[in-house]
Every structure is written in structure tokens, then in C-alpha cells.
Length: 193
Image (cartoon, rainbow, N blue to C red; front, top):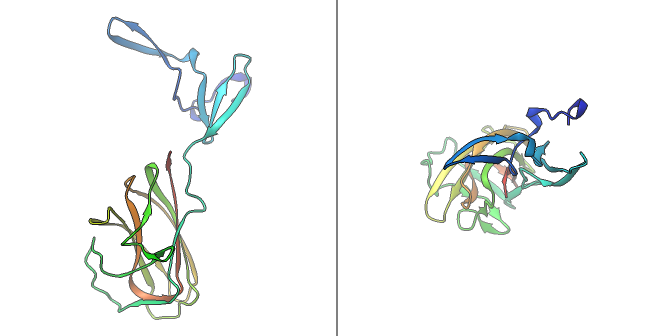
């Protein structure tokens, strides 16, 4: 709430109680004075009649700390590898012991977006970077979303992204070139419940 009880328009996201005057079948402009629910800093608030703001719940929920994939072994592919786009070829990382191309991580959000990918490995001492591709699939059709790398000699890397994905699909992660030992990949998503 801005000073003097005025709402800053950047703080407000209208979701409820925008009342319309109905003249015949044509709705007119909303009467903004009747607004009683709004978002500010990803939290839903209710404005009570006495002017008190009451927090109700969150918005843009994250899968934080995120979904993870891993492998307890050295994973490697010849570099440069010739792996066709949108294919099942490559060395898939596991979800709880199951290859992610068989059973991926289900994306439960509406309008989901990959915001960050975190890579960690026990060893990464090779001449070519380990490159991983994130895919979405429905068990039959695979679509490459993005590729990220773990630079030569580094054991960690963070990639900040803005990649839209499809709600209700599964995510899979695979090595497409290079090598590293005991990799773990974390993906942080956000979206709406």
C-alpha cells in the first residue's frame, strides 16, 4: 500500500470483485472502488472494510527447491555427439532410480516456466564440457526445451532461464555430449496452481 492509503497500480493484480454495471447485455467499465482482493509481492491480500490488509495465500508457487535428476556413475558420450533433436538418444538421468525418458517428473502447474537449472558433479576433468538437454514428453513424443553445460573443470554451474513448458507433461534430462561423474541436475519451475 502506497503512502496515504493509495494503492500503487504496480502492486495490484485484480482477480475478484471487479463489478460491472450491466446496461442491457453490454458490460461497462469496472467499478474499481469495489475491489477487495489483490496481489502484492506474490501474496494475495483481502482489503477489509476497516482498511486492514489480510494476507490470504501465495501466488506463482515454485517447485522449490525444485525437481532433481541424477546418476550414480560416470556418464559419458563421445564428443561431438550426433544426437538428433527431439529424440530418445543420449544418456538419461534418473528420477528416483527410473530413467527419466521412461517416467519423467510430472509438471503440475498451469503456465509453467523453467527459471533456473543447477548442475553439480563429483568429477568433471575432461577436455569437453558435459552438455545436458532438458526435454518434455508424454511418454511417446519428446521435445527438446533447452541445453545447458557444465564447463570443463567446474563442478557446479547455474543457468538462469525463462523457458515455457507444457502443463501435464513429463520432464526428462539427458547427457548429449561430454562426460562427468555422479551428476545431479536441479530445475526450479514456477507457475500457477
